[in-house]
Length: 340
Ligand code: UDP
Image (cartoon, rainbow, N blue to C red; front, side, top):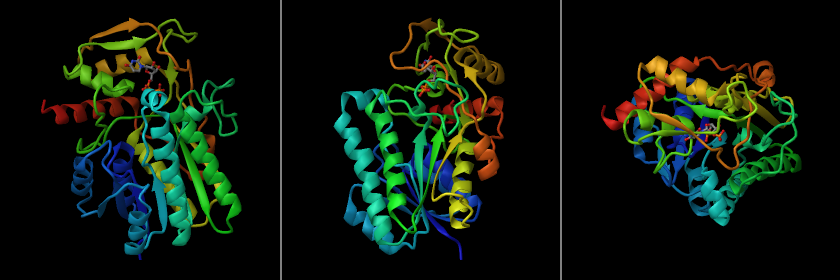
């Protein structure tokens, strides 16, 4: 019988792509989402791509009774917890909104999972926990830096909550995946990133500028201590990232994990500058982007990219899609959303 994976936040950007890859790998999936930062189009897209009527439960993970009902109704074998708020700036302005939603929902999930004997949890963490590392690339052993936003703090706190809960349990297993910069969309262009309002992230801003929704991309700083002066990041294709979750779930369900709590970097291992990303986007999509260089964005780190050795050797996972293909997919998605 197929194992069943609960995907919280499964209507969202990374959750929807992960649901597709889990289904392709033979898992049953239940999506739980309160649609606070998404809508049913993600779920519809997943259903079209997979050809399966993936169950969708509209709920808030803070709602213990609704969560318990879900665990009563479905025999869950593993959970991937994506459901969280993710806007750095908003978290600075409204910290309690972030602490309440991101922390309390994870605690509730862990309590309900324990009650129902569900022992396999994947947590959606972030390279933001590294801040500006002293040594690059960042390995999983690279010390975390004090968080510079409540959002970043919730990622660190949830990692620790999972670590401590695993340590206190006889049977619970947990994996935290630290994503670098997820970008791109499904090759079908049926699912992708749908930011509400003005995008904070680089690639949605680029695609919206190309689509004419934004007038001009601002490049935040060309005076960094990097080869071309712009920041360096590790841009990971969202489908590759989704597949990393499948390997993490399988690792726990097949009892292949070495420790009961494990952390993996999920990136490409390649540093790409903002200028390189913009130039590549223009080249592969054969268009010119309106952009200007402005001052640095407060809070940005200069450079961060992943050492992916552990994910390769332990998970057997490696990023596969080229930056060219990823940036083509991002543009195809934007065009579909805009009807271009
Ligand atoms: N960036 C930019 N213009 C934008 C948005 C982002 O130049 O409109 C830069 C930003 O300074 C950083 C990189 O793009 O160097 C990635 O930013 P993003 O917000 O996507 O991710 P993060 O800051 O979390 O790495």
